[in-house]
Image 1 (cartoon, rainbow, N blue to C red):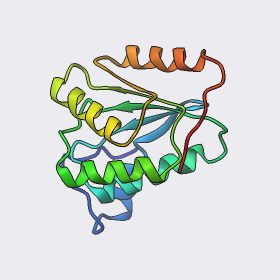
Image 2 (cartoon, rainbow, N blue to C red; image 1 turned 90 degrees about the vertical axis):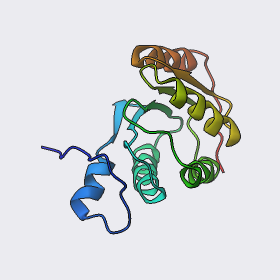
Image 3 (cartoon, helix red, strand yellow; image 1 turned 45 degrees about the horizontal axis):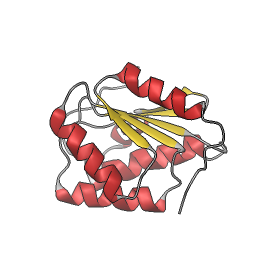
Image 4 (cartoon, rainbow, N blue to C red; image 1 turned 120 degrees about the vertical axis):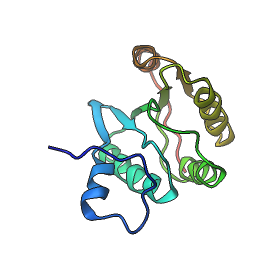
Length: 150
């Protein structure tokens, strides 16, 4: 049974078990949809671990979509927002990204800001998971969606 993540900052001193716990938060929701469950407290190290796992899961996919769960995430500090922008510009991008927060207005605004500042155009921010899933399904139905990457 996977260990639950603690609401604390994870860094390079994290144990192998803690790294695996972070990696386990990234799963395939559908064959071409990655579910990324953000950590309660984000750090550049934690982001690198989790984005690395997302890259592993999507490496063989011609297109992929990202469903980002921010329900337990705190508002990221400036260094984390900067690191997120770097990751979004240096990693292969999803064809479409839908984020959900369960009605957290501050995170809705922060998510839009981070995504837009990284040059992401194909994304949406939702209060509820079902709405985010529906947005991904709508994006898939559009036909050819170009995957942009670095």
